[in-house]
Image (cartoon, rainbow, N blue to C red; front, side, top):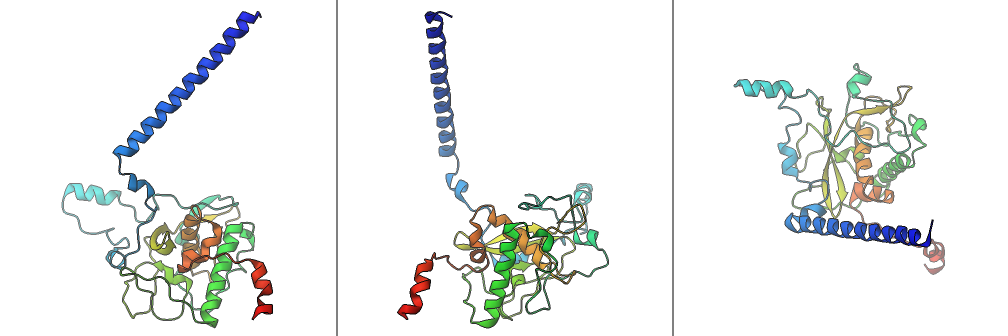
Length: 285
């Protein structure tokens, strides 16, 4: 190969690089123009709507299934309606765990009368979950729930962030299932108690970007090859509050730091504190 040939190859490479830069610049201009013509604010909206007690009270929880129909079109639409809810965004993501299949609770054990709360003051949420402790995220969720439940029982629990659209559930001190809503109405002064929803739709209240949000999940449970549920469960097989709540928190963890689990459950602010200040504090006070 002569020097002239090398020069030609060099200049062709330079020309191709320039063309790529021009095309990339044109693409960026195209994207900017699209954004300028679109509703730019919508690109920055949180993925979940703000919490609204009135909307929760208006929720049908799947009662539209099986309603009376008049026209042939309505009959066709009714036939296409599923008898169960399936989250349009997917069942969820499980960190570091391999899922073989997804099943609904009644498919796992049809003889259980499921509930979405617990009769235990401090539920055991570790003894049945040793097979999922390899997931740091699931461990963190369980530990945060236990911590908050312990704090709520032993000391005054700060009232969560409230607004005109949200009233803190009355009744017993903070409980994790207070964040789950299904087949229930929000009545100020009444004890909050979600009920099992055969349709499989649950709305979970979590704090995100300065507001309480509505995070909707279905009740499909991930199973491993041995048929074990890959979400945290309590010792009582009929309780669904823990896997339902975990599914919602995992959704939020996809977009926030895992250290904000407590923030999402309380609305509290995370304030970093140096361990040196904690270590020397007993010398100062």
